[in-house]
View 1 (cartoon, protein in one colour):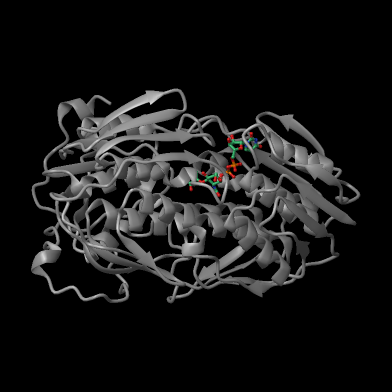
View 2 (cartoon, protein in one colour):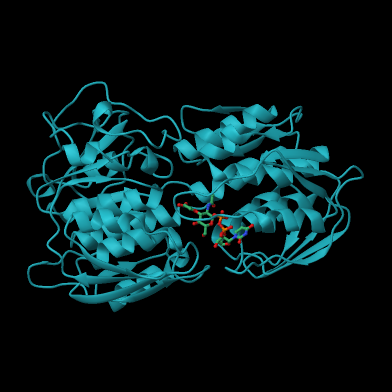
Length: 487
Ligand code: EPU
């Protein structure tokens, strides 16, 4: 199990390119099951959730290959197996996205029912409701969703929103199933997230007939067959947002390239309110340098809501940023109301945060100090890394396999910007393993030194270069203290 060792307090400088979106590519990979022809994805991010989804597809009978350049080709000539068992779904809840495609293609699917997860209760009742509306018979058997539609699926008009609003993967699942249903399907209360739009555009390239993408009313005219296509997924808006916050939290000038600022307008607006200097163009966002001894961010109020409001997937990172603001900020989480695992860890670094129901009250500016912290989920890990970039001294973020699920080589890309961050092999005996790693992690072959501070490097603004597999590591990184070992 790896950890990140971060020397805080360095300014960042330079440019970094955003990867293809993890949350866009996962349903697109599921959609490859809808055709017997190859689907080519030139920019699938090399993150462990994608590798896990490819294992799920392999289990269903698909074949895939990734070229040296990173181009992913997936072909499901047949779908001889129609089961995604507990082992897949346990490791990645996104595996539920194969339910609709497998059902539509083979008229039968068995997918394990996901349990709760660290960010809270995550039901799939709306996915089931959508399949039933399309005429499937759905039962629960031994913890599995068993869906069948002997005569094929048929289109219907349905309302798919739930108590917490629309569902992203639920909309994706029903939309995929409906492409091969007989007749017309109308989804009211559909998710408007860019990842749903991207999936719909990919399906349309495959021959589907979908309209209304990006609105809460999506219409799908069923077709007999879909074909292969080439589809580059949208840039990862959450990775882009995290990198922008890295620039803002360190008061640095960095350029985040190859992103879609129009997918992040709410983040940019809240940064404007916080008086964090930045500007943006068609496909880039640049944060501006400022002296944090003289100027602090203003506190803000943020509520997570479905797109285009503030994304839940940036809530943890925003809290990390607001710990450095001058005053009291209010953050309210309405999508996953318990998604606050990062709060206790940020408090161990010196943040002043009080939880009240689904809100967190963050009082700054905190004098964050480096310490041992534990990553608990993907975005919480990102928040701890961001806090580590500004904390005084050394922060060790344990269990970084969480961050590897959705950020490709994040430590190397931050190090290229001048951050003092390295991946090192953690002492496996120092931490109780109450959570097994969800997916494989990259272990460095040998330790090396932390990168030099940006101030001493001439780092021109440049496109991010491909990086080597193992990150430099700090020699003699401190062993986790006994306190951490007992967790
Ligand atoms: N919900 C239901 N019933 C359902 C499905 C969802 O009540 O059948 C509720 C959820 O409990 C939640 C709300 O609806 O309160 C929205 O959940 P949604 O279904 O939209 O979440 P998801 O599709 O499972 C995706 C992303 C998450 C992201 C959410 C919200 C993927 C693979 N995952 O999950 O991403 O937080 O949408 O935007 O696309 C992440 O990347 O870190 C991550 C967790």
